[in-house]
Image (cartoon, rainbow, N blue to C red; front, side, top):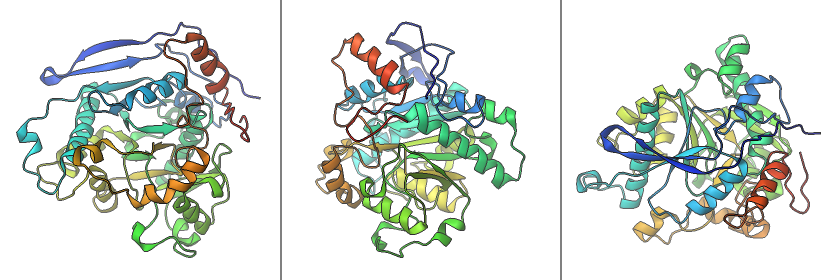
Length: 391
């Protein structure tokens, strides 16, 4: 039986204008302003896991990279309202010709997305927070994100970091830092399009990876009943897990190997500083996309990166803002491979009980429906979809 501490403060949405350095303005979207948090369903170290269920998922802040007037914001805000996430959507600066010129290998859409990520990293550093989660505005997540999934991931991260560092499990670290001391990690991939252990062109036939490949890196596996079984996962994800010897409905936290896409990632202050000054600096980069710069930074330049696998956030299907700006009709192979299972299940890839199908949405202004979805669905981890249970 799940137990929840009910938030009794009235629902409210307000936009607060925050002046940033250089007269840039960000708007902070406040869904709740409360010191209370949910009591998670599964908790191995009470306070640490309790902190991970707060409105910023245990990070200092959450930033959303979103182009002005993005059509994807409405769905994002509805999902955030129901799961009571508190995040900041920075107003993007008006990029000048100097910002957008001088990068012949980077398309305009990719360049604007890159600049948006860097802008969020700068705001994070200015905030004084120790950690931040960066989201792209087309992500989907499970209704059980806060009630079950995040506490499991946070506990796993603390355990594997303490094991790798050789330190004793410190109660204070678990309380103050739900994902482990930021001195021990740099970047955590919570949303991606796969960490496949090798370039995707190599193929995913039986034997493409082996259990020894997982044994060779720091990792921790843990059961998660909110995770789809193999037949309902992205085919490449299912093949990778199966060939690594990972059981059904088991999630991993492991050192990043070949992570693709930056749908959702957490960073520490030291990592954000390195990305801005060195690793993702547009003035010196040789890469063509931001997520590639991050991947190479993890693989070759000493960034201590970890991956939640399968991911907790995945992007919704459809043409991206980058594709629209650059008039690209090409569908990335990762998305093409997931098309059949996404259409069959009407769920975002690797998300078992998400918001894509509209089943959890509410008419704008319908506070009764919103209150029900918050109290009786999201907080209690009830999927409400046929064939799926309450965890």
